[in-house]
Amino acid sequence: MESYIPVLKPSFGEEEVEAVAEVLRSGWAGLGPRTKAFEDEFAAYVGAAHAVGLNSGTAALHLALLAAGVGPGDEVIVTPITFVSTVHAVEYVGATPVFADVDPRTLNIDPVDVAAKVTPRTRAVICVHYGGNPCDLDRLGALCRRHDLTLIEDAAHACGATYDGQRIGSISRLTCFSFHAVKNLAMGEGGAITCHDPALDAHLRKLRWLGISKDTFQRTVEHQVYAWQYWVEHLGFKYHLSDVAAAIGRVQLRKLPANNERRARLAARYTAAFADLEPIETPTVTESAESAWHLYPIKLPDLAARDALIAWLKERGVAPGVHYYPIHLHPYYAPRHAGAAPVAAHIWERVLSLPLFPDLTEAEQEQVVGAVRGFVLRGTG
View 1 (cartoon, helix red, strand yellow):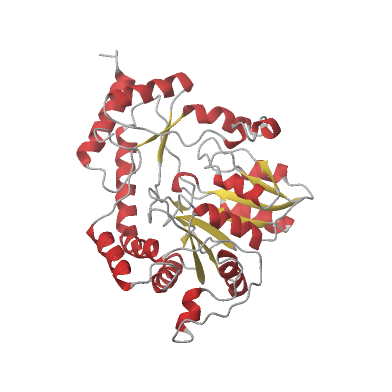
View 2 (cartoon, rainbow, N blue to C red):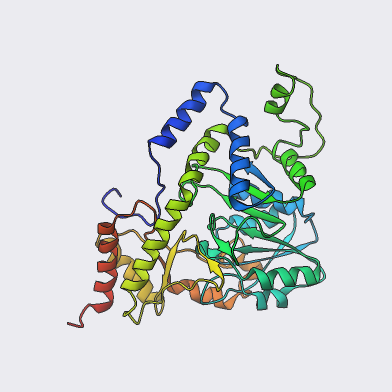
């Protein structure tokens, strides 16, 4: 695969390597001072009062639902165009996922269909900022307030994005982030929840550390020496972030504004390069929003054209992606939900993600652009 231009790739350098080496030399590699520093810096960056560091975006979604009081007998409205963690987390807490359809332009959850899917059992809505492009938070927020529902933002793609001038992570009661290896802020594995409520923050910190009253670092710092006594106050999970990952995350956070600017420039170059290609539909950004450009998804006229372009690109050294096969059509969910989202069931067949990452060179992007244009214009000369 080294000869291919990948669809996604982390942007790591010697700063991240040295940050990890410092952690290993310190003798404290688990949940500790660098995790706390990352949490404080990330909360300040997004404009939230609190950030709780976790070991994955999946863990963030699970704990957010628990913190929102979602459980057996409840329904949670979700999008089918997402990574499966968004929906699995609903089942982890014993609730039922209810699929709302997507806006065919943005592939974000459609507030109109969300409203149609609300029932007396609905407890929460999870919106996914697809590709880094924020959902219509005004309409979703108003809907959730009207029905007394918790709006949980899945911002796995949207680190650094803004909506109405506010950074994603500062708007809703609970926002979940992923710091997986190819995300805009990459740690290898990691996640976070941001919130404003100090009681919610304290509860999440206990849930991430097996329900224990004080984590090991707290018990060491507060008593100068390791204090063995603690209390298990809840049924919690081993979901905490480590100092190794947090050290990488602190470097990545410093780089994030420049890296996201680079992503935006690359996205703009793609859009300009395809402006005259009628079969190619370029991404639509939500009004009043600024995308984090985690993905650059184009749409082709149909499945045959999409799959033909995938084969064409691979033959020319480009590895594209498809984000995503709808969750409600997977074997685990299809028997219960197959007809739930007809727009998503059709639109995914047209979607293809082109390479987009900060270290993508102009020459590499020209190779991608040339391949796409060659596919569309073949036989016209």
